[in-house]
Image (cartoon, rainbow, N blue to C red; front, side, top):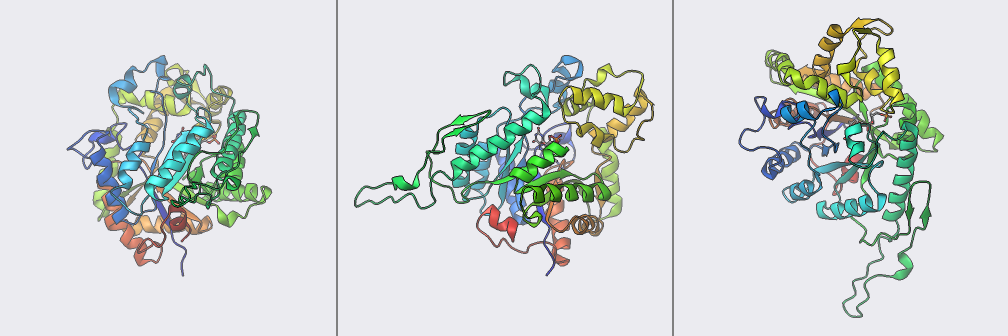
Length: 444
Ligand SMILES: Cc1cc2nc3c(=O)[nH]c(=O)nc-3n(C[C@H](O)[C@H](O)[C@H](O)COP(=O)(O)O)c2cc1C
Protein backbone atom coordinates (compact mmCIF):
# COMPACT_ATOMS: atom_id res chain seq x y z
CA UNK A 1 0.00 0.00 0.00
CA UNK A 2 1.28 3.46 -0.89
CA UNK A 3 2.19 5.86 1.92
CA UNK A 4 -0.48 8.53 2.35
CA UNK A 5 0.12 12.25 1.91
CA UNK A 6 -1.21 14.34 4.80
CA UNK A 7 -2.59 17.80 4.21
CA UNK A 8 -2.88 20.87 6.40
CA UNK A 9 -4.49 24.13 5.33
CA UNK A 10 -3.04 27.43 6.56
CA UNK A 11 -5.67 30.09 7.25
CA UNK A 12 -3.24 32.65 8.69
CA UNK A 13 -3.15 34.87 5.62
CA UNK A 14 -6.57 34.48 4.02
CA UNK A 15 -7.87 37.80 5.36
CA UNK A 16 -4.61 39.74 4.90
CA UNK A 17 -2.49 41.41 2.26
CA UNK A 18 -5.32 41.96 -0.23
CA UNK A 19 -6.48 38.33 -0.32
CA UNK A 20 -9.72 39.12 1.50
CA UNK A 21 -11.09 40.96 -1.52
CA UNK A 22 -9.77 38.78 -4.35
CA UNK A 23 -12.52 37.04 -6.37
CA UNK A 24 -13.41 33.75 -4.72
CA UNK A 25 -12.87 35.07 -1.19
CA UNK A 26 -15.84 35.43 1.10
CA UNK A 27 -17.97 38.44 0.28
CA UNK A 28 -20.86 38.13 2.72
CA UNK A 29 -18.92 38.75 5.96
CA UNK A 30 -15.70 40.37 7.13
CA UNK A 31 -12.92 38.99 9.28
CA UNK A 32 -13.23 37.75 12.02
CA UNK A 33 -16.85 36.65 11.67
CA UNK A 34 -17.06 33.19 13.20
CA UNK A 35 -19.51 31.99 10.52
CA UNK A 36 -16.69 32.23 8.03
CA UNK A 37 -14.49 29.90 10.05
CA UNK A 38 -17.30 27.47 10.77
CA UNK A 39 -17.92 27.18 7.02
CA UNK A 40 -14.22 26.70 6.26
CA UNK A 41 -13.83 24.01 8.94
CA UNK A 42 -16.75 22.07 7.50
CA UNK A 43 -15.39 22.27 3.95
CA UNK A 44 -11.94 21.12 5.13
CA UNK A 45 -13.49 18.18 6.96
CA UNK A 46 -15.56 17.24 3.91
CA UNK A 47 -12.23 17.03 2.08
CA UNK A 48 -10.78 14.79 4.84
CA UNK A 49 -7.86 17.16 5.43
CA UNK A 50 -5.72 16.54 8.50
CA UNK A 51 -5.86 19.98 10.05
CA UNK A 52 -6.44 23.65 9.56
CA UNK A 53 -3.75 25.93 10.85
CA UNK A 54 -3.37 29.37 12.35
CA UNK A 55 0.04 31.00 12.51
CA UNK A 56 0.53 34.06 14.65
CA UNK A 57 2.18 37.40 15.04
CA UNK A 58 1.02 39.91 17.59
CA UNK A 59 2.37 43.28 16.44
CA UNK A 60 1.22 45.52 13.60
CA UNK A 61 4.07 45.70 11.06
CA UNK A 62 6.08 48.88 11.66
CA UNK A 63 9.56 48.12 10.33
CA UNK A 64 9.02 50.16 7.13
CA UNK A 65 9.99 53.75 8.04
CA UNK A 66 9.19 52.93 11.68
CA UNK A 67 5.46 53.45 11.04
CA UNK A 68 2.34 51.28 11.27
CA UNK A 69 0.53 53.51 8.77
CA UNK A 70 0.87 51.52 5.52
CA UNK A 71 0.12 48.24 7.33
CA UNK A 72 -2.95 49.69 9.02
CA UNK A 73 -4.18 51.22 5.78
CA UNK A 74 -3.79 48.16 3.56
CA UNK A 75 -4.30 45.29 5.99
CA UNK A 76 -0.67 44.16 5.85
CA UNK A 77 -0.09 41.51 8.53
CA UNK A 78 -3.01 42.79 10.54
CA UNK A 79 -5.61 42.45 12.03
CA UNK A 80 -4.97 39.21 13.92
CA UNK A 81 -7.09 37.68 16.66
CA UNK A 82 -6.11 35.06 19.20
CA UNK A 83 -7.65 32.11 17.35
CA UNK A 84 -8.11 29.78 20.34
CA UNK A 85 -11.81 30.63 20.94
CA UNK A 86 -12.43 30.35 17.18
CA UNK A 87 -11.02 26.82 17.26
CA UNK A 88 -13.33 25.95 20.13
CA UNK A 89 -16.30 27.15 18.06
CA UNK A 90 -15.16 25.35 14.88
CA UNK A 91 -14.68 22.12 16.78
CA UNK A 92 -18.36 22.13 17.70
CA UNK A 93 -19.31 22.10 13.98
CA UNK A 94 -16.97 19.21 13.08
CA UNK A 95 -15.84 15.81 14.37
CA UNK A 96 -12.49 14.96 12.81
CA UNK A 97 -10.55 17.89 11.41
CA UNK A 98 -7.53 18.90 13.53
CA UNK A 99 -6.51 22.43 14.55
CA UNK A 100 -3.01 23.91 14.63
CA UNK A 101 -2.48 26.92 16.89
CA UNK A 102 0.64 29.03 17.27
CA UNK A 103 2.18 30.62 20.36
CA UNK A 104 5.59 32.10 20.93
CA UNK A 105 7.96 30.50 23.42
CA UNK A 106 9.83 33.81 23.60
CA UNK A 107 6.88 35.82 24.89
CA UNK A 108 4.50 33.37 26.55
CA UNK A 109 4.79 31.43 29.78
CA UNK A 110 4.75 27.61 29.50
CA UNK A 111 2.32 27.14 32.39
CA UNK A 112 -0.29 29.34 30.71
CA UNK A 113 0.16 27.71 27.28
CA UNK A 114 0.18 24.14 28.67
CA UNK A 115 -3.07 24.82 30.52
CA UNK A 116 -4.77 26.51 27.57
CA UNK A 117 -3.85 23.73 25.15
CA UNK A 118 -4.97 21.08 27.61
CA UNK A 119 -8.39 22.76 27.75
CA UNK A 120 -8.58 23.10 23.96
CA UNK A 121 -7.67 19.43 23.57
CA UNK A 122 -10.68 18.64 25.78
CA UNK A 123 -13.08 20.90 23.88
CA UNK A 124 -11.95 19.57 20.49
CA UNK A 125 -11.95 15.92 21.61
CA UNK A 126 -8.18 15.49 21.04
CA UNK A 127 -7.68 17.41 17.82
CA UNK A 128 -5.05 20.02 18.80
CA UNK A 129 -1.58 20.70 17.44
CA UNK A 130 0.72 23.37 18.88
CA UNK A 131 3.04 25.24 16.50
CA UNK A 132 5.74 26.65 18.75
CA UNK A 133 7.64 29.64 17.37
CA UNK A 134 10.51 31.79 18.59
CA UNK A 135 9.14 34.96 16.88
CA UNK A 136 11.44 36.88 14.60
CA UNK A 137 9.61 40.18 14.29
CA UNK A 138 10.38 43.36 16.18
CA UNK A 139 6.75 44.61 16.24
CA UNK A 140 5.78 41.44 18.16
CA UNK A 141 8.67 41.75 20.62
CA UNK A 142 7.78 45.37 21.43
CA UNK A 143 4.41 44.26 22.82
CA UNK A 144 6.12 42.01 25.36
CA UNK A 145 8.63 44.51 26.75
CA UNK A 146 11.59 43.92 24.43
CA UNK A 147 13.44 46.84 22.78
CA UNK A 148 15.37 44.38 20.62
CA UNK A 149 14.81 40.79 19.54
CA UNK A 150 16.29 38.23 21.90
CA UNK A 151 19.44 36.70 20.43
CA UNK A 152 18.60 33.93 17.87
CA UNK A 153 20.31 30.99 19.66
CA UNK A 154 19.00 32.12 23.04
CA UNK A 155 15.45 32.15 21.68
CA UNK A 156 15.92 28.48 20.80
CA UNK A 157 17.42 27.67 24.24
CA UNK A 158 14.27 29.17 25.69
CA UNK A 159 12.07 27.12 23.32
CA UNK A 160 13.82 23.90 24.38
CA UNK A 161 13.15 24.69 28.03
CA UNK A 162 9.61 25.92 27.30
CA UNK A 163 8.61 22.62 25.68
CA UNK A 164 10.40 20.62 28.35
CA UNK A 165 8.24 22.37 30.99
CA UNK A 166 5.04 21.94 28.97
CA UNK A 167 5.67 18.22 28.48
CA UNK A 168 6.44 17.78 32.19
CA UNK A 169 3.19 19.58 33.06
CA UNK A 170 1.15 17.52 30.59
CA UNK A 171 2.45 14.35 32.26
CA UNK A 172 2.17 15.64 35.83
CA UNK A 173 -1.31 14.17 36.24
CA UNK A 174 -1.50 10.48 35.27
CA UNK A 175 -4.16 9.58 32.66
CA UNK A 176 -5.95 7.41 35.25
CA UNK A 177 -5.61 9.83 38.21
CA UNK A 178 -9.25 10.92 38.22
CA UNK A 179 -11.76 8.64 39.93
CA UNK A 180 -14.89 10.82 40.21
CA UNK A 181 -16.30 8.26 42.70
CA UNK A 182 -19.76 9.56 43.58
CA UNK A 183 -20.14 7.02 46.41
CA UNK A 184 -17.08 8.04 48.44
CA UNK A 185 -16.60 11.50 46.97
CA UNK A 186 -12.99 10.68 45.91
CA UNK A 187 -12.01 12.92 43.01
CA UNK A 188 -8.44 11.92 42.19
CA UNK A 189 -5.66 9.69 43.49
CA UNK A 190 -2.94 11.91 45.08
CA UNK A 191 -0.20 9.37 44.22
CA UNK A 192 -0.89 10.06 40.52
CA UNK A 193 -0.62 13.84 40.70
CA UNK A 194 3.01 15.04 40.92
CA UNK A 195 4.74 18.40 41.15
CA UNK A 196 7.44 19.00 38.54
CA UNK A 197 9.76 21.27 40.62
CA UNK A 198 11.26 22.87 37.53
CA UNK A 199 14.03 25.44 37.95
CA UNK A 200 15.83 26.36 34.74
CA UNK A 201 17.54 29.28 33.01
CA UNK A 202 14.26 30.87 31.92
CA UNK A 203 11.44 29.43 34.04
CA UNK A 204 10.58 28.28 37.53
CA UNK A 205 7.44 26.16 37.60
CA UNK A 206 6.33 24.09 40.55
CA UNK A 207 3.39 22.18 38.98
CA UNK A 208 1.49 19.97 38.76
CA UNK A 209 -0.86 21.17 36.03
CA UNK A 210 -4.15 21.60 37.84
CA UNK A 211 -6.14 20.05 34.99
CA UNK A 212 -7.74 16.80 33.88
CA UNK A 213 -5.47 14.99 31.36
CA UNK A 214 -6.74 15.64 27.85
CA UNK A 215 -7.73 13.09 25.18
CA UNK A 216 -4.33 13.24 23.45
CA UNK A 217 -2.40 13.70 26.71
CA UNK A 218 -0.68 16.58 24.98
CA UNK A 219 -1.13 18.35 21.65
CA UNK A 220 0.86 17.31 18.60
CA UNK A 221 3.97 19.52 18.66
CA UNK A 222 5.01 21.21 15.44
CA UNK A 223 8.02 23.44 14.93
CA UNK A 224 9.52 25.21 11.90
CA UNK A 225 13.20 25.80 12.57
CA UNK A 226 15.06 26.33 9.31
CA UNK A 227 18.51 27.50 10.48
CA UNK A 228 20.98 24.90 11.83
CA UNK A 229 20.08 25.97 15.41
CA UNK A 230 16.37 25.84 14.56
CA UNK A 231 16.69 22.34 13.10
CA UNK A 232 18.46 21.19 16.26
CA UNK A 233 15.46 22.28 18.29
CA UNK A 234 13.06 20.67 15.78
CA UNK A 235 14.89 17.41 16.42
CA UNK A 236 14.69 17.96 20.16
CA UNK A 237 11.03 18.90 20.57
CA UNK A 238 8.88 18.32 17.47
CA UNK A 239 6.50 15.56 16.43
CA UNK A 240 6.18 17.25 13.02
CA UNK A 241 8.16 19.94 11.26
CA UNK A 242 6.93 22.74 9.02
CA UNK A 243 9.38 23.63 6.26
CA UNK A 244 9.50 25.86 3.23
CA UNK A 245 9.30 24.51 -0.30
CA UNK A 246 12.63 25.79 -1.51
CA UNK A 247 12.99 23.44 -4.50
CA UNK A 248 13.46 19.67 -4.61
CA UNK A 249 17.23 19.62 -4.05
CA UNK A 250 17.12 21.98 -1.06
CA UNK A 251 14.16 20.14 0.45
CA UNK A 252 15.99 16.81 0.22
CA UNK A 253 18.94 18.52 1.93
CA UNK A 254 16.67 19.93 4.66
CA UNK A 255 15.17 16.48 5.26
CA UNK A 256 18.69 14.96 5.46
CA UNK A 257 19.83 17.62 7.94
CA UNK A 258 16.75 17.03 10.07
CA UNK A 259 17.35 13.25 9.97
CA UNK A 260 20.95 13.72 11.13
CA UNK A 261 19.80 16.00 13.96
CA UNK A 262 17.13 13.46 14.98
CA UNK A 263 19.69 10.64 15.08
CA UNK A 264 21.96 12.86 17.21
CA UNK A 265 19.01 13.27 19.62
CA UNK A 266 18.59 9.47 19.74
CA UNK A 267 15.30 9.65 17.81
CA UNK A 268 14.14 7.59 14.83
CA UNK A 269 13.73 9.93 11.80
CA UNK A 270 10.76 7.90 10.59
CA UNK A 271 8.76 9.12 13.60
CA UNK A 272 8.99 12.80 12.61
CA UNK A 273 7.14 13.91 9.48
CA UNK A 274 7.66 17.13 7.53
CA UNK A 275 4.85 19.32 6.23
CA UNK A 276 6.17 21.29 3.27
CA UNK A 277 4.61 24.70 2.89
CA UNK A 278 3.10 25.02 -0.64
CA UNK A 279 1.06 27.68 -2.40
CA UNK A 280 -1.35 26.05 -4.85
CA UNK A 281 -3.83 27.16 -7.45
CA UNK A 282 -5.78 24.09 -8.53
CA UNK A 283 -8.29 24.54 -11.34
CA UNK A 284 -10.01 22.15 -13.72
CA UNK A 285 -8.11 23.59 -16.69
CA UNK A 286 -4.55 24.79 -17.16
CA UNK A 287 -5.88 27.94 -18.75
CA UNK A 288 -8.01 28.95 -15.76
CA UNK A 289 -5.18 28.17 -13.35
CA UNK A 290 -2.83 30.33 -15.42
CA UNK A 291 -5.36 33.17 -15.56
CA UNK A 292 -5.69 33.24 -11.78
CA UNK A 293 -1.94 32.96 -11.34
CA UNK A 294 -1.36 36.03 -13.51
CA UNK A 295 -3.83 38.00 -11.40
CA UNK A 296 -1.83 37.47 -8.22
CA UNK A 297 0.46 40.40 -8.86
CA UNK A 298 -2.42 42.83 -8.43
CA UNK A 299 -3.60 41.65 -5.00
CA UNK A 300 -1.47 43.88 -2.76
CA UNK A 301 -1.48 47.64 -3.26
CA UNK A 302 2.06 48.82 -4.16
CA UNK A 303 2.30 50.95 -1.01
CA UNK A 304 1.88 47.87 1.15
CA UNK A 305 4.71 45.82 -0.38
CA UNK A 306 7.59 47.51 1.45
CA UNK A 307 5.69 47.26 4.74
CA UNK A 308 4.98 43.54 4.21
CA UNK A 309 8.54 42.59 3.32
CA UNK A 310 10.26 44.76 5.90
CA UNK A 311 8.17 43.12 8.62
CA UNK A 312 8.81 39.60 7.34
CA UNK A 313 12.57 39.92 7.09
CA UNK A 314 13.22 42.37 9.93
CA UNK A 315 14.91 45.11 7.87
CA UNK A 316 13.59 48.52 6.87
CA UNK A 317 13.73 48.26 3.08
CA UNK A 318 13.11 52.01 2.74
CA UNK A 319 16.78 52.35 3.80
CA UNK A 320 18.14 50.17 0.97
CA UNK A 321 21.18 51.69 -0.71
CA UNK A 322 21.04 52.37 -4.47
CA UNK A 323 23.22 49.30 -5.17
CA UNK A 324 23.96 46.30 -2.91
CA UNK A 325 24.40 42.54 -2.71
CA UNK A 326 21.97 40.18 -0.98
CA UNK A 327 24.78 39.02 1.32
CA UNK A 328 25.42 42.59 2.57
CA UNK A 329 21.77 43.04 3.49
CA UNK A 330 21.53 39.60 5.08
CA UNK A 331 24.57 40.44 7.21
CA UNK A 332 22.64 43.39 8.67
CA UNK A 333 19.48 41.31 9.14
CA UNK A 334 21.37 38.57 10.98
CA UNK A 335 23.19 41.12 13.14
CA UNK A 336 19.81 42.42 14.30
CA UNK A 337 18.83 38.88 15.48
CA UNK A 338 16.10 38.22 12.91
CA UNK A 339 16.23 34.80 11.22
CA UNK A 340 19.52 34.21 9.35
CA UNK A 341 17.73 32.12 6.70
CA UNK A 342 14.44 33.93 5.93
CA UNK A 343 15.84 36.60 3.63
CA UNK A 344 18.11 34.09 1.87
CA UNK A 345 15.01 32.01 1.14
CA UNK A 346 13.01 34.77 -0.48
CA UNK A 347 15.99 35.92 -2.55
CA UNK A 348 17.07 32.41 -3.51
CA UNK A 349 16.48 32.97 -7.23
CA UNK A 350 18.97 35.85 -7.26
CA UNK A 351 22.57 35.22 -8.23
CA UNK A 352 24.79 35.06 -5.12
CA UNK A 353 27.28 37.91 -4.73
CA UNK A 354 25.93 39.97 -7.66
CA UNK A 355 25.43 43.68 -7.09
CA UNK A 356 21.89 44.81 -7.94
CA UNK A 357 19.87 48.00 -8.06
CA UNK A 358 16.89 48.88 -5.85
CA UNK A 359 14.57 48.78 -8.88
CA UNK A 360 15.67 45.27 -9.85
CA UNK A 361 15.30 44.09 -6.27
CA UNK A 362 11.81 45.57 -5.94
CA UNK A 363 10.54 43.84 -9.03
CA UNK A 364 11.59 40.45 -7.63
CA UNK A 365 10.20 41.27 -4.23
CA UNK A 366 6.82 42.29 -5.65
CA UNK A 367 6.67 38.77 -7.08
CA UNK A 368 7.51 37.27 -3.72
CA UNK A 369 4.96 39.34 -1.81
CA UNK A 370 2.21 38.14 -4.14
CA UNK A 371 3.46 34.52 -3.75
CA UNK A 372 4.05 34.68 -7.53
CA UNK A 373 7.46 33.03 -7.12
CA UNK A 374 6.06 30.19 -5.01
CA UNK A 375 2.77 29.16 -6.57
CA UNK A 376 2.36 25.78 -8.17
CA UNK A 377 -0.62 26.11 -10.49
CA UNK A 378 -2.45 23.81 -12.86
CA UNK A 379 -4.87 20.93 -13.17
CA UNK A 380 -5.34 18.43 -10.32
CA UNK A 381 -3.15 15.99 -12.26
CA UNK A 382 -0.28 18.45 -12.59
CA UNK A 383 -0.44 19.44 -8.91
CA UNK A 384 -0.68 15.82 -7.75
CA UNK A 385 2.40 14.96 -9.89
CA UNK A 386 4.31 17.78 -8.20
CA UNK A 387 3.24 16.78 -4.68
CA UNK A 388 4.02 13.11 -5.25
CA UNK A 389 7.47 13.89 -6.59
CA UNK A 390 8.40 15.95 -3.52
CA UNK A 391 6.75 13.48 -1.14
CA UNK A 392 8.67 10.49 -2.57
CA UNK A 393 12.01 12.33 -2.81
CA UNK A 394 11.80 13.44 0.82
CA UNK A 395 11.07 10.03 2.28
CA UNK A 396 7.24 9.75 2.14
CA UNK A 397 6.93 11.05 5.67
CA UNK A 398 4.42 13.83 6.42
CA UNK A 399 2.82 15.86 3.67
CA UNK A 400 2.04 19.45 2.78
CA UNK A 401 0.77 22.60 4.38
CA UNK A 402 -1.29 24.43 1.78
CA UNK A 403 -0.48 28.04 2.61
CA UNK A 404 -1.17 31.57 1.38
CA UNK A 405 -4.23 30.57 -0.66
CA UNK A 406 -5.08 33.45 -3.00
CA UNK A 407 -8.83 33.23 -2.24
CA UNK A 408 -10.70 31.37 0.49
CA UNK A 409 -13.03 29.49 0.35
CA UNK A 410 -12.53 29.14 -3.44
CA UNK A 411 -9.04 27.65 -3.27
CA UNK A 412 -10.00 25.37 -0.40
CA UNK A 413 -13.01 24.12 -2.39
CA UNK A 414 -10.74 23.45 -5.36
CA UNK A 415 -8.39 21.40 -3.16
CA UNK A 416 -11.29 19.46 -1.67
CA UNK A 417 -13.25 18.90 -4.88
CA UNK A 418 -10.46 18.49 -7.47
CA UNK A 419 -7.10 17.71 -5.83
CA UNK A 420 -8.22 15.33 -3.06
CA UNK A 421 -10.08 12.98 -5.47
CA UNK A 422 -7.01 12.90 -7.75
CA UNK A 423 -4.76 11.97 -4.81
CA UNK A 424 -7.29 9.36 -3.68
CA UNK A 425 -7.32 7.79 -7.18
CA UNK A 426 -3.55 7.43 -6.85
CA UNK A 427 -3.88 5.77 -3.43
CA UNK A 428 -2.08 8.74 -1.86
CA UNK A 429 -4.86 10.17 0.29
CA UNK A 430 -7.27 8.78 2.89
CA UNK A 431 -10.86 7.96 1.90
CA UNK A 432 -12.12 8.37 5.48
CA UNK A 433 -10.80 9.38 8.88
CA UNK A 434 -9.67 6.24 10.68
CA UNK A 435 -8.75 7.67 14.09
CA UNK A 436 -10.47 9.67 16.77
CA UNK A 437 -7.65 12.09 17.58
CA UNK A 438 -5.36 14.19 15.41
CA UNK A 439 -2.37 12.10 16.51
CA UNK A 440 -4.12 8.93 15.31
CA UNK A 441 -5.15 10.44 11.98
CA UNK A 442 -1.67 11.77 11.31
CA UNK A 443 -0.15 8.36 12.01
CA UNK A 444 -2.62 6.45 9.81
C1 LIG B 1 4.73 26.55 7.64
C2 LIG B 1 5.41 27.58 8.52
C3 LIG B 1 4.65 28.28 9.46
C4 LIG B 1 5.24 29.27 10.26
N1 LIG B 1 4.46 29.97 11.13
C5 LIG B 1 4.99 31.02 11.80
C6 LIG B 1 4.14 31.85 12.59
O1 LIG B 1 2.94 31.62 12.70
N2 LIG B 1 4.69 32.92 13.23
C7 LIG B 1 6.04 33.20 13.14
O2 LIG B 1 6.48 34.18 13.76
N3 LIG B 1 6.87 32.42 12.40
C8 LIG B 1 6.37 31.36 11.72
N4 LIG B 1 7.19 30.58 10.92
C9 LIG B 1 8.65 30.88 10.90
C10 LIG B 1 9.42 29.85 11.73
O3 LIG B 1 8.93 29.79 13.05
C11 LIG B 1 10.95 30.15 11.77
O4 LIG B 1 11.20 31.34 12.48
C12 LIG B 1 11.54 30.27 10.38
O5 LIG B 1 11.29 29.06 9.69
C13 LIG B 1 13.03 30.62 10.41
O6 LIG B 1 13.78 29.62 11.02
P1 LIG B 1 14.88 29.94 12.12
O7 LIG B 1 14.13 30.52 13.30
O8 LIG B 1 15.51 28.60 12.44
O9 LIG B 1 15.86 30.92 11.60
C14 LIG B 1 6.64 29.56 10.13
C15 LIG B 1 7.40 28.85 9.19
C16 LIG B 1 6.81 27.87 8.39
C17 LIG B 1 7.66 27.14 7.38
